[in-house]
Length: 406
Image 1 (cartoon, one colour):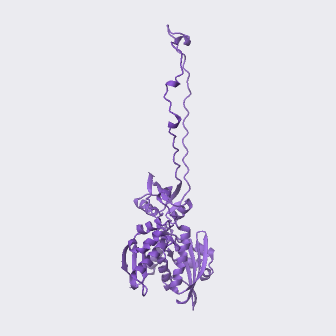
Image 2 (cartoon, rainbow, N blue to C red; image 1 turned 90 degrees about the horizontal axis):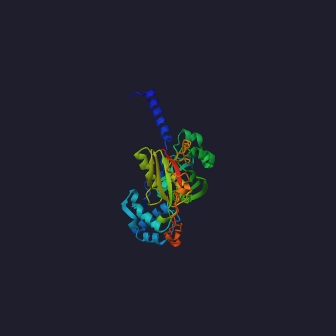
């Protein structure tokens, strides 16, 4: 087959153009589709009941954090009969047990226990890593064994971990030395092209039996760093536990019952199709409440919805900002009302002359037959205690304004 360089270059240009276009499109939030699926390995001598209880503990920690109180009555009772929280049980590769939990059942247990929780939407964390070896430092490839090990640990602990493309632009912005030194300015600048709220700098050293991880995490305005040693599997799992804890501290939704939920109005522009409306509703259902968003009004491509949320405005905005299709905008200014035209001036009418027989003195037109009396006694006056007070109008719900860029 003859090689045609011109056609090859055209295809490369088309591919690069498609990549550039896709990079500029808004990307949805990091939604963990397998959040309620847990895979565990049965150790020697471990009973099936203990294995299912271990999987249930992992499930609860994914939602309610590593420090979830397993001794609370609702949670302790659920751990006695973990099968009631499960939808199906099957086997996976490597002799693992795969368990899929029922979201409503798990959510009910955490709600009864009064535990704060996270939903499927999680902040994305982009990983910049270098691996040290006999040949020196090298940037960690997404296909490397350590990358796969970290990805498996992230999935197990419900961390939305992603890797940079590692293309020419990334190589021009970030070097191995900057990753090892956890250069904040360089790494945060390079992470701006990715739909992630967090940036992780990681250095991997040692063998599988004795590994050392030096890590630094930037998540919103928080900064954490640490050092982990152990086997490769233990170190990877411990790193993801610490990342999950940092995410939980910033994004956990407080527990709240129906009567304690705060009401909010969301005015969203740009909902110009059924797909956009469906995507908006799907995103709003991840706010940690069982109450569905309610549509209040539609004006063209602008929709006004009412949602319930158990947290503050700052927490609500942070959760909504996880979806990059939703952009906060300032409150629209009302259009000025038209100035009414002035009414025509009143024209005085000429007096009508009296005809014959009409009296010219108005006082002579009235004849008082009986004196006026005080008619207060004849009126039905309600006693003070029977007068119903007027209830004040309910305060208007706070409104947040957004534009949909789906």
